Amino acid sequence: MIWLAIGTLFITAVLIFVLPLWRHTEQLLPVGLDGGMDDAGQERLDEKKRLLANLRALRLDFAESKLVEADFRSLETEYEQQLAVILEYAVQARSTVPRIEPRRDLNRMGSIALVMVLAMATFPLFNHYWKPVPAPAPAAMTAKPPGQGAPDVAAMVARLEQKLAANPRDISALLMLARSYSSLGRQEEAAGLWRKVLELDSGSREARSSLAIALLQSGGEQAALDALQHLKTLREAEPGEPAWLWYESMGLSKLGRQDEARAALKKILTLVPPESENGRIVQNALRKLGG
Image (cartoon, rainbow, N blue to C red):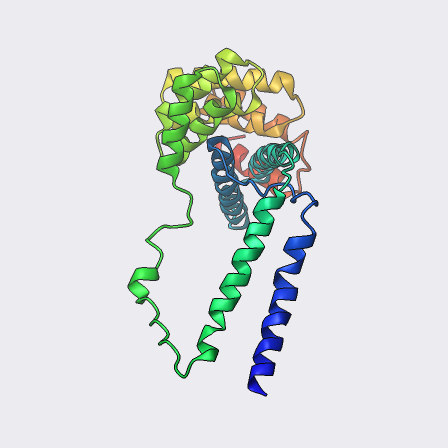
């Protein structure tokens, strides 16, 4: 009776696992089975993780009132636009993956191999003993090394530097490397890359605004003057954006031009409701400037 049960089990396994491989060999494999992620795809994945982390940190800072609403909305929009670009690249890359037709002979060879594996798996049932099951590997051998799964910023920077060495005019790589330098605290190198982006594309909003903010943070009279020039260009392109006026007031205050700084803050109050949170912050800054 047991031999009948074993035979029935074996035939059932063959029908379930092997027959589909043998018969349905003309269907195309799903798109993407060839897999493989190139350097650009890995860079975009790392950049996506970094942007999501920045968004979370930005929203936490705003919730803790470390940022004014104008700065928060401006930076949030920039991060979301960068994420949208990365997602669009991913969609385009997925749509261009070629469809692969499987080889009929390989499918049949695979099905024969599966039959052999099933036959070998039932071999112990025809004997009076079972082979001992190997003990599981120690936890120390299966544990993931520290940091595995987290984006390696240093490796991403190295790849971007290598990519730019081959093509120094790659604006996308320049911006990504500048952001990486900035997140690592290498502000001077980041500022140099933003300047290079502006040489290639004077209309880059991200490069100009990031450079202006970095110059304001670096201190120094000449840095403040350069920042004001960049902010003037941004205001001419977006006259209704209060963030540029806020940073302009900071630069003017650093230069001791308090009257002009107060005028910039008062202009912000014409763009945002005075009773809003941003309006109260601007009014508080005005009081500190004696306005």
